[in-house]
Amino acid sequence: MAVETGTSGHSTQSYQVTQVHPSPSIWAIQNFMSDEECDHLIQLGEDKLAPSLTIDPETGNHIQVEDRTSTLTFLSLNQDPIVTQIEFRIANLVRMPVNHGEGLQILRYEIGQEYKPHYDYFDPALSGSHKALAKGGQRVATILMYLSDVEEGGETVFPKIDLKVPPKKGHAILFYSLYSNGELDPNSLHGSIPVVKGTKWVATKWLREKPFIA
Ligand code: PD2
Ligand code: ZN
Image: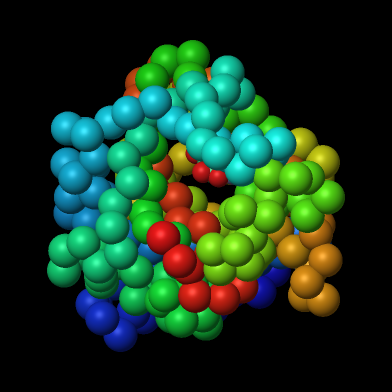
């Protein structure tokens, strides 16, 4: 397992990166965020939570589906100095410009809430994908940053490769939805299994091929 240590140039946070799977490429990042940063993101999210939506593969419009039962808040890029600091840390980690990132999403899962297995990429064969692809191209990678510990359940799972990642405050995972040649990786299927005890808070950032157009 490859291990490297990164230090964010925009703060003193020092984190450890470990590759946990080669294809899809999945990386675990310990201590990616401080407790204060996690608490700050939860605070930004908690007053503005609304039902989570997904993109309808037929129309490209945002719709509410039974597969995603959490609530969420979307943050703006560069919303405040702490958000900006985290966005630069992510850009540094993935070696992509900060403007390739969609805005952070702050997600809350209560007991029983989940996100059933899905792909973060847009399947170009589906009519609804064109609208989404026009806003910065394909989603190349995703970083999930855990903002709370969860007493039981709430793991991020990759069913095709039998991998389960328990949420732990301050830790993150980064995974790629495309092969390095740009083709879609079907093994990147992933989800969040139901919370059994406690509350799961997570921040998600989806990273595009090109600058993201909100
Ligand atoms: O919250 C998660 O663990 C999770 C799992 C799968 C989030 C997402 N996908 C996502 O936001 O795309
Ligand atoms: Zn996802």
